[in-house]
Every structure is written in C-alpha cells, then in structure tokens.
Length: 427
Image (cartoon, rainbow, N blue to C red; front, side, top):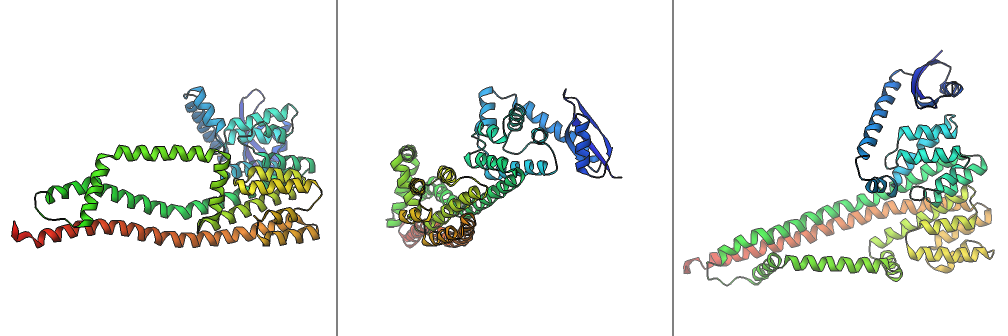
C-alpha cells in the first residue's frame, strides 16, 4: 500500500509529522482529520515534510522581517495594496485545488495561510478561516476585504455557494483572471520596446546637450567663424538646458499637477477616456480591450448564475472607462423596465454592431452567456492582432524620430567643423 508522509498541526498549534499507509491522498486527508489534526503538507515522498519545514521557516522569517516595519507601513503593504490579476489567479487556483482534493473549507483556508500566495498576505486566509469558523459564508467573509476581493469575486463565490459548485466557480474565476492578466501583459509588452527606445534617445540627446556641447563650444569660441544656423540653434538650446534646467523641471511638475487635477475631476476623466478611445492607432487597441473586458466579465457572471441587473452593475464598476460605464448604466436602467440587453446597448452607439448582433442571437436562443463568450473571444483575438500592428507601427516611428534627433545633433556639430576647416587658412 502506498505511503504518504505528512506534516500537520494540533489545535494547540503544535507541529506533528508522520507517515500513513493509505491507498490515496484523499484517504490520507480523512485519516489526518480523524486524528484531530490540521494538515499542512501531504506527499507520497518523505521529502515533502522537509520541503514544508523549509517553507514554514521562510514564512516565519518573512513575518519576522515584516514585524520590523512600523505598524502603519506594515498595514499599508500587507492590507492596502490590491493584488495583481495574476496574483488573484494564483490564489484562487490554489484554493480551488485544495477544495478539489477533498479538504473542508476551513482546513483548506488554514493550509492557504501556511502556503502563502504572492501579493496576498497569509493574514487574508487566516481572517477568512476565522470568519468561516464563526459561521459566515466564504462570500460574506470575502466581502469584508474589498481591497482584495472585488464585487465580481464575491458575487461569483456567492453564486457558487448557492449552486453547490464552489470549486467549479473558483476554477472559472482563476481562468478569468489569468486571461485578463495575459492580455494586460501583452499590452505592456507592446509598449516596452518603444518606451526603451524613447528613453535611450532622450538620454543621449540630453547628455550631448548638457555635457558634450559645452566642450565643443570651448573650441568654437576661440575661432572667429560664423557658425551655421543649425549649430547656433543647438548652442542656444544647450545653454538654455544647462542654465534653466530648474525652470523646465518646474514647468513639467506644474503641468503634471494640473493634469492630475484635471484627471481627478469627473469631466476631465470622461474627456481623457473619450480621447483614449478616439486616439489614432492606440484608440483601436483601447476599444477592443474594453469590449472584450465587458463581454468576458458579464459572461462570467451570468454563466455562474448572477442575476442580470447585478451582473450589469458589477461590470459597470469594474470597467475603467467612463464612456462605457455610462452606456452600461443606461442599459441597466432600461433592462429594469423589462427590455433586453441588446437594444439599449445599440442605442448607446458606443458598442460595435457585431456585438449587438451576437447578443440578439444569444437572446433569441436563450444563451446570452454563450453569446457574450463568443464576443469576448472575437475581440480578444482582434486585440492580439491590433497590438501586433500597433507595435509594428510604433517601433519604426520611434526609431525614425530618435534617428532624426541624433542626426540633427551630428549635422550641427559636423557643419560647424566644416565651417572651421574651410576657414582654417585665415587663422
């Protein structure tokens, strides 16, 4: 019979370990629970206990180091930071795997508090376990930590609890977050290369203007030669940068503050969101991302039994664009009057006709979640292509702009050198 090594805790907190002769992992879990223990690690090899001990030492060391921080900072880093999408996906998948293996919810949450998850403090799992042990549902416990679990997460878990399919819902949530994390990473990857090229090019220009140009000027000033216009422009710009750099910094800082204030206002945010959707090249990417996010979120909620009005409200809260938010809010008001989703969405003139047509088909066939899933897949595939096209357009454009800037610098210096060389017999 197979042997399973385990590490567990007594109710008092004491750590125990041993080996069980049981047919499978589920039987090992049941045997450990009969002994009144809380499992921490179970594996068919004895090396699992050593791995668990090493992991626990790492967790204790991390906790000890975090305790060195002031309470305010420790609370900020542990509780106030919202986790990234991939971190939420990992946490959700871990919890789903533990529940799928046959663990009771409290035992699974206890194990999560020892396993730990990047970006989500172990205290989160401990708080969830405590609330569940006090008689609250998992969704209610999660609703007490909105900085970690948003309305989408809480309502889907509540739907899973009511339908008895919590594990399936958690798996769908993990897939949902992983898909959005993947799209987010594609978008960021598309911007990395242009950003690097821009930073390097601007750095070269700034270094040349503030450091190299004064050295050339020391040569030009000793010779009575009329410098070309391009060189004079470069010299004036270099002098201005080196003398009034603080003024430029002050102007940039003022512009940043004014932009932040404008962005924080309702009208300003709406104007910026509209500009993003209508901007050349990047506007198409922004719209495809918003359409896919809307369809995927609404489909996920409806597929898991969340009521239509609640699903629309949650989707409205999650979508970051104010223009799309307004359209969803108006749609929700009209759906309250008994109308379908497709009609008010069409009247908003924000969503594309393809989405409206697919939604109408879904409403006619009684499969709106399936139709929304097809919409999401369509726009996510288009988004991948649009990101590739945007990258292919931006990269050469940035290279050309930087090449023109550096070329102007070289032309200005070389033209001055040629002017000196042509007049060298006069000195």
